[in-house]
Image: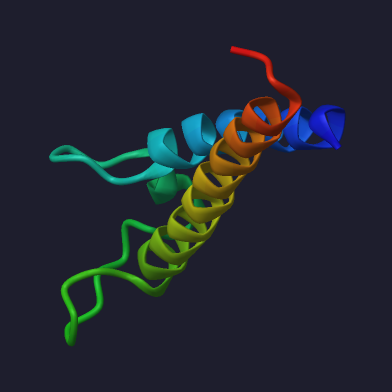
Length: 80
């Protein structure tokens, strides 16, 4: 269980780095390559950017949950 949680933590950490780098900053971002440069007149952000936000939040929740699970597993095992 510890190995599986560690793998999930590593994968979600790498995904978080990629997803955060894809977000649009002040001057644009990598999301512009995927159609993020086209602005919506309603919300001020594109559908791609909103979906990227949702995906980033979802991966962030998984990342946080894997840290909590690893912490509980190590505490239960008596490590640390």
